Length: 309
Image 1 (cartoon, rainbow, N blue to C red):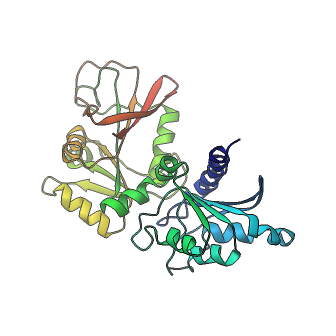
Image 2: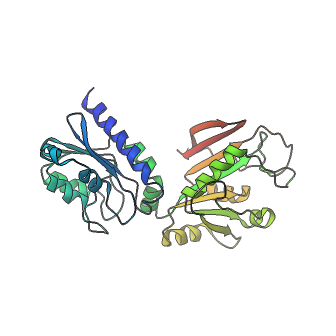
Image 3: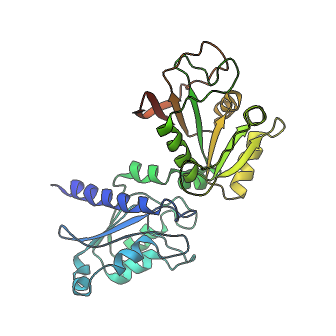
């Protein structure tokens, strides 16, 4: 196994660990850290909760006392660049320097303005060998909400709908449920993972959707109804100012088209049921800039996830 393959192996472990912080790390990113000597992991950790210890701190804390002398020959793998500023916790870059590890492998640079390469620079200035960009796309995908929020000053936007096999989101303009028990549960799981959910005024008035998490566990997202007199730019600005990092847009079709036409979308989640309804409201359709990321079948329904190419 060459060095790149070894680095990718341990970075995958960082990503596994990082995902454990999905519910409680917010608004901080999910981060995992693994400390390796030779090909033996001597410490690992992840950022468990906002305001508490970062992944690197937890990884060092997990090392047994008899393994402490090995740190001079160790490599620390971190899915996101170590912080270099004082926030609710001290800088992790300083801790890594203090512990005296030989090498640091970073998945991706932190887009947060207080970091943005400063952690890497501090490590390099202290004589630590630094490798950046191992499984970079996977590391950025895990924290895509955090990255979009800090790079584009808006929430990560997911457009979501369920449709018939012939491309309608209702039947003769009347509500109909296309989701089955499994996909309904997944929809509510998604709601529990995102911060806000939006529907257009017409959908809200006609369907009276609850927009809550009743088929999963977790907090309900913030409910938003888009009125005709509220420009999307104003909405995006307001959500950014309130620190909202992610938004699900559940309908209707015209609302979806408005987001697409304005370019305010990052991900599409389209569920297709095997029903043919013959008429009603046409789904917004898949834009030319969409790239299929995954497709799974649940029962007889297919759920496709697209990202902006």
